[in-house]
Image: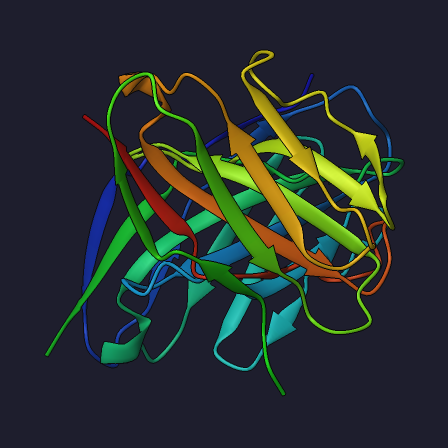
Length: 114
Length: 115
């Protein structure tokens, strides 16, 4: 079974600064997919970024980028130029190659301060 | 275009009662998923439908939980003899098809409170 761990329950950052959210996972699979989801107070989960484990290049989506360290089973999210609208819960998630279910971490609550 | 919708948005019930939670996926999406999110935790997988059939129900916690998708579109999650521990937000997601290459789009969830 896969496990996903987010060790930072809460974080805060000043507007326009950069913040990094941590995620580690455990799996015996060789190929898999990793995701970061944002959950604002509206509760609707929104996909932020995804990474295929077989790709060495770290994924980037505008202000969001990941640092994927496969050997260390680490998958951190960097948010650059933080905006007030980035305030939300952030969840790291895992999906195996053959599966359809997402396995989520416990989440990190991010507060962007003006 | 319309996203995934869930009704009701909030449901309060008494211990021992039966509840039904509804999910309307994005039109044309053949895959549908139910997750449960307890307070302060990440969502946990319950069940996955491909079309009308439950392709994976390994996440259902016990036989009080049951889900259907009779016409391959709307799905209903049914909980019998509710317990206080069932209190959570129940999230539904849909994707164009199953598999890792199809993004799961989530609804806003139903918050279930069992008194």
